[in-house]
Image 1 (tube, rainbow, N blue to C red):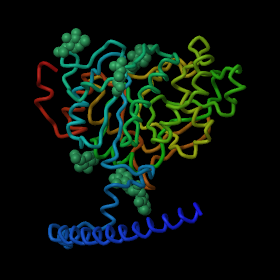
Image 2 (cartoon, protein in one colour):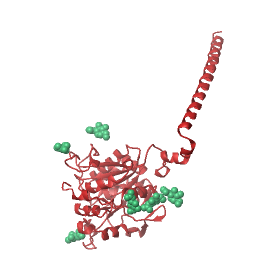
Image 3 (cartoon, helix red, strand yellow):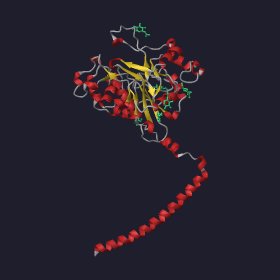
Image 4 (cartoon, protein in one colour):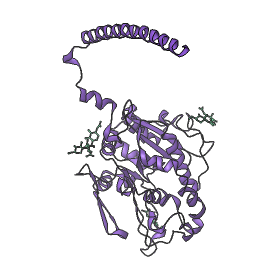
Length: 371
Ligand SMILES: *[C@@H]1O[C@H](CO)[C@@H](O)[C@H](O)[C@H]1NC(C)=O
Ligand SMILES: *[C@@H]1O[C@H](CO)[C@@H](O)[C@H](O)[C@H]1NC(C)=O
Ligand SMILES: *[C@@H]1O[C@H](CO)[C@@H](O)[C@H](O)[C@H]1NC(C)=O
Ligand SMILES: *[C@@H]1O[C@H](CO)[C@@H](O)[C@H](O)[C@H]1NC(C)=O
Ligand SMILES: *[C@@H]1O[C@H](CO)[C@@H](O)[C@H](O)[C@H]1NC(C)=O
Ligand SMILES: *[C@@H]1O[C@H](CO)[C@@H](O)[C@H](O)[C@H]1NC(C)=O
């Protein structure tokens, strides 16, 4: 009896609910029709965007197919010892960029502050990691700093490419050229090759890092978001490097870590296996002893139009240990290999600026005595 009463009661409620639903539905329909009519009045069909251009504004399938609002950004990650001596050049570069498409992060010595006293460019104010660490060359602290930069930059979902730069790096092109170049490839740019000749691999690593996955390559990488996540989230390979890849073992972590980690993740098919940052090596040291090669620092005299053109004209890189030639292309057209170069002195960077390599010549920037 009790049960039946309940059922009747429930039936009564559901009949009332149906009536309410129908009223709400009709009201909504009328309101929506009125809104649609009003919006048509404000935006006549002839001026409205076609559906494909609307979706292109919010979905960026070529930037790793995750949707987010706004423009995809390139994150510029500066790994600095202290200040950024070439800030005047980067200032000009960023001034000529679309502010919505860039983000800047700096890892510098703990305690060093980028403010009006230490940089002339406000682009670098408040862009510093507040959890930076003391970095020693050839130690795992270098790759830890890289990981901190990536971790911070990953917090912004609009960052789709992550370019690691040193304080002595310069751009060789304007921002729009670099942006389009990076956008055209769904891959990371990671110089990575078999390290046959040197014995930096420490056999103690073998339970964790098989020798077949050991790679070498330039520290100056550009990652897609997925690979940036792999590096920032890695808690397997990094501790092994920290323990076994040390300067005292003639092992330089930053020349192996990302390359080896991505090989272990079977991600090499997702790489352009080359760097986009040019480094000139001093080959005057004897050929036998390549370990003593060191990067040349470009001075004012070395940074003339002729020399810069020579770097820009390079369209392939040969990897001796693999007999592999990497042809540099962008969506199947031949392109220059290098977008950035190092190491540049202030004088060399001023010459780039004055010769209009990265933007229109701005005399005031170079004449400013406070620079
Ligand atoms: C910049 O930061 C340093 C260190 O915190 C501080 O000593 C200096 O006064 C600051 N300069 C300006 C102009 O804020
Ligand atoms: C560091 O910055 C983050 C935001 O980027 C903030 O949440 C955090 O509190 C800061 N930490 C310190 C110690 O200032
Ligand atoms: C950027 O550089 C490219 C090639 O060097 C040039 O074609 C283009 O006009 C430049 N764009 C701007 C905005 O300066
Ligand atoms: C690379 O390809 C993209 C798309 O195909 C194009 O927009 C861009 O201009 C190209 N960049 C260079 C440097 O050729
Ligand atoms: C690359 O080229 C193909 C065909 O030419 C085109 O469909 C594709 O959209 C291009 N990719 C980018 C990133 O522009
Ligand atoms: C190359 O190295 C040699 C010896 O270390 C040095 O004398 C020379 O100046 C260097 N050349 C350049 C271009 O840096």
